[in-house]
Amino acid sequence: MSDLWRPCCKLDSLRSRAQMLATIRQFFNDRGVLEVETPLLSHGIGTEPQLAFFSTEYYLYPDKETLFLQTSPEFAMKRLLAAGSGSIYQISKAFRQGESGRFHNPEFSLLEWYRTGFDLFQLMTEIELLIHTLFAAQGTLRKTLVTTYRAVFEHYTGLNPLLFSKADYADYAAQNGLADAILICADSHALWLDFIFSHRVQPNLGQQGLCMVHGFPACQSSLARVNAENSAVADRVEIFIQGVELGNGFYELTDAVEQERRFDREIAYRRRNGLPNVDKDRRFLDALVSGLPDCSGMAIGLDRLLMLLTGADAIDQVLAFPIARA
Image 1 (cartoon, rainbow, N blue to C red):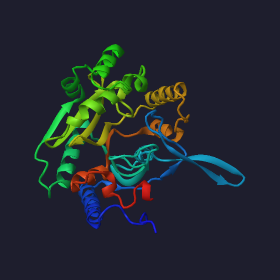
Image 2 (cartoon, helix red, strand yellow; image 1 turned 30 degrees about the vertical axis):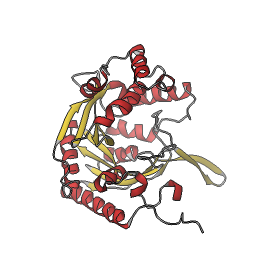
Image 3 (spheres, rainbow, N blue to C red; image 1 turned 90 degrees about the horizontal axis):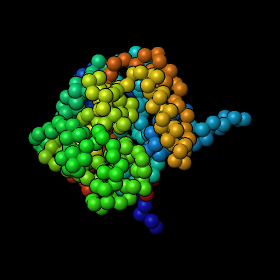
């Protein structure tokens, strides 16, 4: 008889997860942030080329339609914000195709929250407080480093991430054992940055505590605003501990016209590169037209966070049933 029926993680890990979730809920409840729940199955999906998604057919005889398992609850939560919810948070599952490995499982747990009236630096203050609250029992996070994307990228690579030179990036890749980058990244500034950052910069971040990197190049703005004082950078932050990317946050873009323009660019990129075609999420765009309040938001991968809290070496050690045993 196979033992694949058994859970992968130990009972202590389940207890640690329960405590982590209780601490998160207490943190936001103390601040008057409303817990919400949004659908995992939806008509729309994000257009980002780097995110592969799961889809399914919904049959309601005699019709059928394509629905998507959400890669993030972001669009639905922003629809709630536009409807007047005020500050909200959610602990949910999310799904991404083709993700498996030490830090990846195609189904994973996510904390996402939005704070109305917060700019990026107010959000970063709250992120730091939440992370230090969660690690208080371990006493392992004694310091926080706040730095810019350009500063860390230049420090570890010698390249200016705000100026795209394919020749310079290709030379760097060839000299640093990253020959695959030329095929993977082609002429995309954003893909070159992602590839080099993940291989040569990220492993160094957060080795002494929490590292918060902000001021991402504008080509990586995603759903963040471009900075009002420097159009070369976006109001975006990512956080790292021990070289592990834990989360991604934005001073949220509220301009529906600009957001639709970004969707159009991403859809065009998908078509040029033979990626699955998707439509713009019209319900999300209509919510932006209706009026998304001034806000900042953050998403944190809870399984990775639990790995760091418990000292686990791989994500399978904190999941009861990872994909191989699901």
